[in-house]
Length: 178
Image (cartoon, rainbow, N blue to C red; front, side):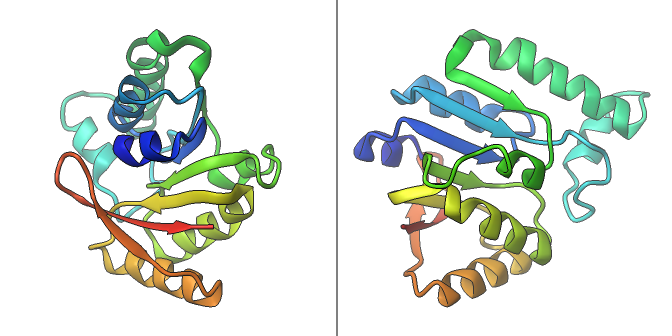
């Protein structure tokens, strides 16, 4: 993603699904992004198909929600704090966060939140209008049947061509230009 962001000189980007913040940190370290928005509710049982929080919980005696609270604090104050005003971590659902953005206000959106079909469809419907013309909406986890089905269905209805990119670390990214 950093190479695509640099190539197009995107300045305002948003990521749905921050988790540990590694992708956010890579984007901010390796691009000239002026404003990164990271949206994640940090709520347990949010995506039952994603084992992320259970994996985090394997290293502590806390409840899943306590792990989510701890993770949010760590990502915000330790991992991403170094980027100051360039980075805004929004602890909210995708729907709640989308309601606070103006249509056409974002250059690039990366979808990596709830991986269930209905949730991916909702994320695409919520965030697609927020993307400016010429902007890129993208995501990973296309190998998950639910993600692929939602992405294919949504963009077929929009009559947009789906592109596949290789990331700098070797995983596949789907993307659509508006």
